[in-house]
Image 1: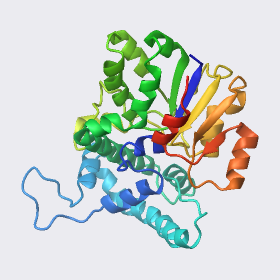
Image 2: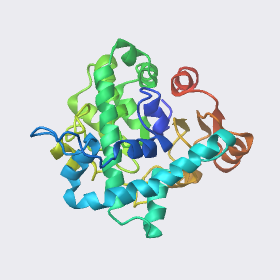
Image 3: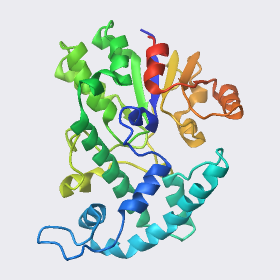
Image 4: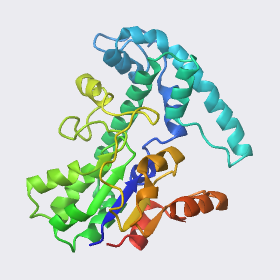
Length: 322
């Protein structure tokens, strides 16, 4: 088996369930759900004061003192969304705002208080845990068979599991645990002799470069996003793009091939991977939609990545080999 690195972006999870919000969708969902409108008539005992479950849970998790920051938070996010929605139909090349960059820039400009970082992290955790819950509720035989993770394991099953542990590395820029959850199911399916220790090692070797919602044993996959104790734990477990990030130790110069699935090729993310140091990787190939020739040429010249106009499932079926 070749020494292989697989890099996952938000599209890798979205390709399994389109409900997973990415990019501009995160900001739009924040604006939509984070409302301070009160329920009319007043709710019965045990129900939140506000119409939005997100708002009620946010205040329960972060504290009622965060209420004064919500209106400012929405105001500062509203205009960039409107601006993008106005420009995109007129210029398909316009780049949507990134929530991480937007929050960072507005905090530095004193347009948002420092508390905005916790609000953003909570909402991201809320939306992604909700998406994980939806995926678990929607799991059917079709979901289990017709996704790229299953294709990956079908191509791995000819190897010994110890060989896979030694030669396959997964790096993900996602906060969700979709890959780990499906992997545990598929290890049972294709490697039913694998020990608990081997399964634990496989999951522990999945590197979340910005952190995740937490270990599956701490915040279960399919957990409800109104579970206050779990939410208090989950939103603290990851960093935003422009915060301090995990360092990928020991990855340089160790791979023969690198695959990119659902990855957006953001320059900051590419830089954090340190791809220029992966001199042994002669095969670098990935998914990519809506890339103009200039972007493809830049990726090819700078990083040696060949971009294919394919989704994650069809890409894995056609190109993954070990």
